[in-house]
Image (cartoon, one colour):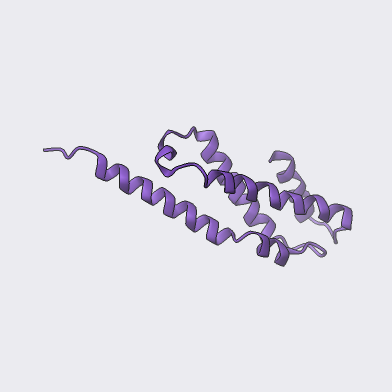
Length: 114
């Protein structure tokens, strides 16, 4: 994702517009984190607690990149298409809901202190 982040930073930093050759790779950049997040959602919530930090970090990076791409304001970049491809708010809400369910299930499973 580092190369993708550099590419989007470069594009948003001061481009006057995008050519078709530039838009095509950026569209694939939308699909890659979307697919990664989709794979993350296949992990059972009960296994979230044992996930390494690198997985959670990658999830955060994917969400950040998806948000950046869906709000990119560069002439020629189809931000509306990116927003139609990925609903960042929905994905973020789903992650938050899943994490809350994990927290609740583990809090209720802990033995009560007397």
